[in-house]
Structure formats: structure tokens, C-alpha cells
Image (cartoon, rainbow, N blue to C red; front, side):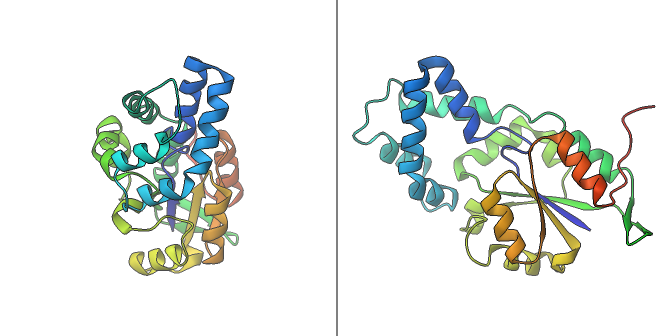
Amino acid sequence: MIILSDLSEVLINGLSGTSVYVYQDYGREVFTNYWQRIRETEDSFENLMRGKLTEEIYYKIFFANNDFPFTEAQMRKYFSKSFQTSVPGTLDLYRRIVSCPKRLDGGELQEGRPDIYIVSDHITERLGEIKGYHPEIFNFVKGVFWSCELGRIKCDPHFFEDLLMTLGVDADEVIFIDDSRDNIMAAKRAGIYGIQFMNAEQLNLDLFQLGFKIESTKP
């Protein structure tokens, strides 16, 4: 059994975290304009995550003909600040699943710990920074698939089919966890069971209902 897990908004904060800082520093109007500009530059942002644009070029596109009260340098700091923050409970849950090596499947106990991989749409220039912030994540998972290294993001056609071929597994051996409904639907088109992440407590329940035996936090 393999668990494919998103990184941003599942294990660490991502883009949504930056908007919190914009709101705190500049208020609702700037926050609204910020998200509007994110949507307007969505194609460029996706190409940034595919590794087809540099972060510097994306900022030039983002700030073009826009008079934001914060600078490119401040936006970089918002990203860094957001990426430093972990999502509560998720890594601990993954550890408890791996430490309890049984999965109930069709009424029978299936031995073997699941392998956990990260599958993340992310920016080339940020990979080293994020690994430095969260070594506990990258020392724990079996591997990482970065969109900026693959040249494709999760909602691109055939992303998950090709990932299954790379891993050498069938779709029914895989569970995919992501906060994005679009990414969940892309995985489902490849035959992979998807769980839309809300928080660690809900994920715990979803995995338990699928038959995962999860080690208790109680003595």
C-alpha cells in the first residue's frame, strides 16, 4: 500500500498562508486585491510550479501594472514565513499509521507498513529552503515528487498514470491525500482513491474508515 500526500496545506502551510499575512498587515481591501491578482496570474503561477518560469520572473508578472503596498521582497518573506509553519497533526498521524503495520482489507488483516511519498506542486527556488525548515518530514517519507522537477503539475493530463508507472504499482494499491478537489479528481481519473484533506482529525477518521489500523496516542 502506498500513500501519496500533498505537502502544502496538508503538511506545511502554502499559498493560503501568505494571504493571512497580507490581511494582517494591510487589511481586507488589499487582501481581496491580492487574491484577485493571484487568480489573474494563475497560468504563470502554474508554469512557475512546472519549473518553466523562475520565481523572479513570476514576481515581475504579478506586480506588473499593480500598485500593491508591499514589495517583491516582502512577498518573498511572506512565502518563507508561510512555508516555515507546519499543519498541526498530519505528520504525527502518518507516523502512527506507519508504526501500526496492519490494514483491514475485505475482513482480512494485511501485513506491511504503507510507503508514504510526497507529491507536491512547488517552486524550484524553494525546495532547499523547505527541506531545511522541515527535515523531520523529508527524513520520514520514502520519496518526493516535485512538479518543478517533473515539469508537470498534478492536474496536468496523465500525471498520475505516469506516476503509477514510475512507482511500478496499480492504482488500487494507492491512496492520494490532497487539499485540492481538482487534484483529487485528476487522481480519480487514473483510478486512484482520493481523500480531500480538511484537517488531521478528519483524515484520521477517513483513513480509519478505509481500514487503516492507527496507533493510538494514548498510553
